[in-house]
Image 1: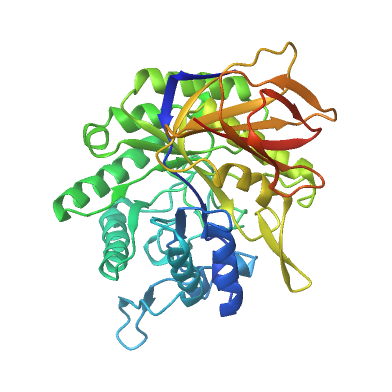
Image 2: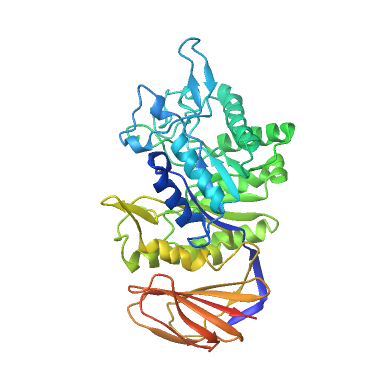
Length: 439
């Protein structure tokens, strides 16, 4: 049943990030097609583009990252004649080209994020983490240099006319990052180090009157074990004043649905004027065949949980083009994974400004997952049936003209019904269904 009188968060945007694929797309036609499928209204209609400010490992002669696709090209490069580092904004041209097409097709919020400070600022001389696990790789004497580096880059993008929405200088601070594991760029920070660095960002952004937000701290897991990041973030006077949002990731929470609800309820109760954004998720580790409906169902379950249990105001996937993304190349051809169509069941219908409303499951032992939003003109309900059997139910509380879209093993976000709304609904086995009813 739909109860439109019970209202929750106002939704802002869906999005995805540029790691680790955008810098590898050196063909313009491919860059254009990828951006079209992700950001145009004929594609996913995403609005957020998370652009990676790389730590420069592609330029590091002693780089330890074994996967060359995860070695980033930085705007901050050493002048071999003077020995000084300078900014060169002609670099990272592949990723910037994807960004340009994304903006052309509809991206209106760019978040500039860092996985690590530039390698030249770190203790280890690497952006892939410290030489010891769980040790911050950024010396405190370089905090200000890192702040200036990020803000200089952000200000350049603003000056070029890009819609920079926020900067996010820290990524998953609680993970160990470094030691013998050097799979990507990353930097560990204790909770106190995280807060101290973000406070410096906020202070400098206020001084410079920066026209974008500070986002963070991109906590790698929204569980009780890391809830201290939330508490100390908003216990900081300047961060509480300066930031209206806490950013976190949904990794490792697939089997912790009840804990996710408890964390979400606590966040909402303690910080009623703050918002939570889910800024990164992919299946990790990747076990499900990306071409199957099981892959799409897995992603859809996480999205519904984050929207309902965590009251997320935005939801952003991690890699867009990769084995764990929503698209990839097979034999040179760009293909959409099933996750692409599962994502589309949300992104094509739940639009910025819509308000989440209550759904009430009146079926005993039901395994359906539902979420509903309204803009005052229509109600959109997404129904996920992860089981091997079709399930029939009554979607009460709605009336008007309706359209139903379906993704399952044979449909790819296809319209299966248009006409007067019938409250008797059957969700096919292993399916994601979106019901849009005009009010």
